[in-house]
Figure 1: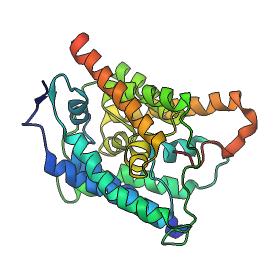
Figure 2: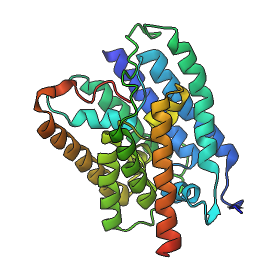
Figure 3: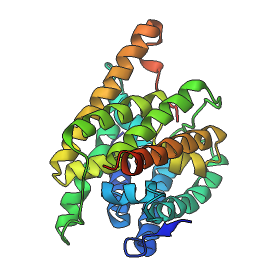
Figure 4: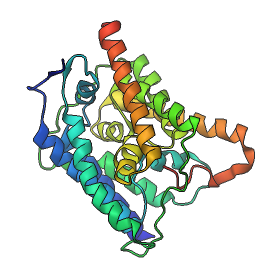
Amino acid sequence: MMKYSVTSLLAGLIFGLGLMVSGMANPEKVLGFLDIAGLWDPSLAFVMGGAIIVGLVAFAVARRRTLSFLGFTMKMPANNRIEPRLVIGSMMFGIGWGIAGFCPGPALVALGAGEIKAVVFVASMVAGMMAFEVIERIKRPSLGDTRGYQKN
Amino acid sequence: MIDIAWSQFTPGAALTGGLLIGLAAASFLLLNGRIAGISGILGSLLVPARRDILWRVAFLAGLVGTPSLWLLFSELPPIQVDAGYPALIVAGLLVGIGTRYGSGCTSGHGVCGLSRLSPRSLVATLSFMATGFLTVFVIRHLMGV
């Protein structure tokens, strides 16, 4: 499990580096992309494009494997259904994203940069995630800790 | 119709950063066998009695630690947050609940899901993009903030 955590740390670092290099850790730049009716900054589309080019290759390789290159089980999302909660949740996320210009990754990087507003945002985001867990538990008490696992 | 902000547009840095994000997601997938979905990695830590705590904390520590590592080599890039505190709190709550309810964010659905050609993630990405565009339009052009 040590190896697993080291590669996780490295993946987190490279991810954070990508967010900083691309300018996406800066909410002003993200909002410049979302403001299509103002002066539009298309940079975010190039970030997604660059990431997806690499991702397409990686997932094409991953699809043919049952074990990772380190010998761990490939855990792919099992749920293929397009349910109302997928759309409603994503729409809520988009509203929050549009208000602040932060999504989870960039907010954590900005927090690490010592940005006090990112601290407030992340604290609220964590509170929101905890509220979700509480609501789910009230709705479906039997699900215990298997819920929320291996989903995308 | 669309006015491009040429002075802010940074295609080279955006593409380079994007390739790095792709590399991070690819290594996480091919080495650890998992989707690098940040809201899921964080959100699943908030459930009591869960296993898999160490690697989740390690991944998040990597993200949070990036600026410190960056500072060893260079100045931090600008981070400009125009939203006020009440707006940040509302936005944070919406992002927290919304990403968990919708099972993913820009990384899990946007980067990994689209790379996986998942119809579910395409729907999620179109949904949060749509409300993201709409929200900024309402705030900047209808409310004039």
